[in-house]
Amino acid sequence: MNFNQLKRFPILILILFLVFQTIYISKVNSAPEQKMKGICVRGEDIEKLGAKKVVLTLKEYNYNTIFLLVKNPQGKVFYKSEFLPVENDVLGMLINEAHNNGLKVFTYFPIFMDKNFGFLHQEELMQHVNGSKNDYYVSLLSNVYLNYIKHFLDELLQYDIDGVSLDYIRFPNGGYDFSNTFMQYAQQNGIDTNKVKSIAYKTFVNPADWKSLFEAYEQGDKDIVKWINLRNNLVKDEASIIKEYIKSIQPNIDIGAFMVARGFRYKTTEEAEKISDSLTYQIVNFGQFSTTFSGFDFIAPMVYLSSLQENSGYTPLVIENLKSDLANTPVYTAVNPFNISSEETEKELFYAFLCGEGAILFRFPLFSMGIWTFPSKPVPQEKTIANIKISSEKESSIELIMKQQNFVPVFYDTIFLGPFLEYISIKFIIGSTMLVKNNTEIQMDTAPFIKDSRTFVPVRFISENLGAKVSWNSDTREVKIESGDNVITLIIGNLTLVKNGTEIQMDTAPFIKDSRTFVPVRFISENLGAKVSWNSDTREVMVEIFKEF
Image (cartoon, rainbow, N blue to C red; front, side):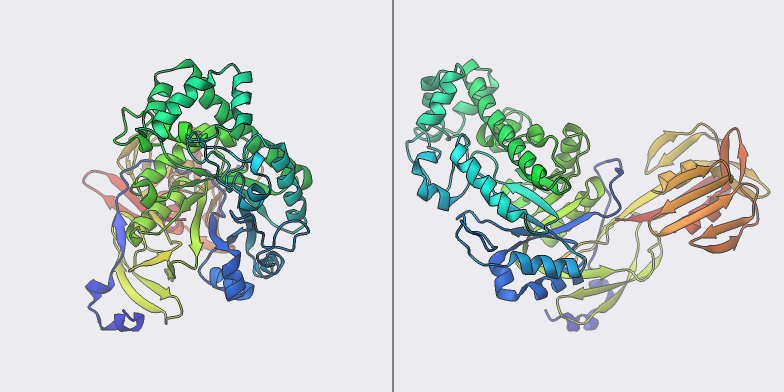
């Protein structure tokens, strides 16, 4: 459909957007204001389209970070290398264009997948339990390859890149590695390798039941557990070695990793509908789990819904589990729109920004991108205007009625990086210390009350529950409230409220009672963009707001 034809459609058809009530309850974390809005790009596409066009396009659609596949699985690189085969020399041009336009450039590359190296060093390859070797899969025990990677990093880190994300730092599957070198290493660690090989052969070759090794691990078989732990520790150690080597050259660079994201809904094979949905599958098959990347600056779980056969509700489970295991390491959810509806993709992005620190999409230019903007801040239960632009088409405006629900933008098969709106409702009852936020009760240590025909509430409770930050200056007796681009300053006993440098007169002043600062709820809430309503029968104050992220 031509975008310009939209004007002919009735308004009800034009309002193609999604609002949904979050069924997953999550705390809004204290993430940085600047969320990751990343997108993966391949060097051949930069060569084809030109670095300038790629950067300007991504900037227009609100991306802030480009992830360049700088060394592909074939082992070819996209910069001028002195010892590696060069596919295209695009890295320098991309960095210049991106930095000139305010975008960051991260590079990513597979670690234990390099056909160029494997072809030259057959003796350093992994071996499948069936006896075959694949030129792509390099042994985790190869010191020759580790030095090869370090040499590659010596070259790469001469460029002014902003970050590095390790990819494919794992085993291909549980059928690896049964090379002589790895078997000897396992024997030195007290493992009965004949037993392990027999069970692995049954699992992956004949009869290929794809369960024997996983069941033996869950049943606590001593040799199988030691084998799996050996593999897992090797992955973790190699990841740490490479991370530390990068930091030794560029101490301030951000280092993260892409990881497989299976097993965050079910721990055991017995709980899961399919073995591949279990945490056991993740650990036994790939040698990866949450703490594999402890100490990294970020983690990027590949929550590819199509390949995982999952829905968007899986995303917050992944993020919350990773944050719990990795002490709040920033989580950038890797999202692949392929074979997933735009509705489900936008829901996944909603969770990536709500529960985590952003998203990395795979990949440009494989999906349609759009811009969705609100000229003014939407208010629950009120009409608003949205502007939509897709590709190079003309911008079109539509009218929406904002419901009392979370909002994500959905329009045909287009991917928008927001705006995402979290619906927040707060209910106070005069004289009650119980606050109700989105149907969840929260205990306050002091109750709201009416004075001079105005309802007063504790400033910290109202502001922080609306997503704002509150600070107190005891010397000047000032309260500062920060929310997005808004900064509000109040002085105890003063009728003047200052919002973004502009003075606004109130008809009643904030004051301190019982060691708490009380403010008029309507003035504060409305200046934060909220809607306030009063029920005189129940003596309830309802405050509603959309928090954008």
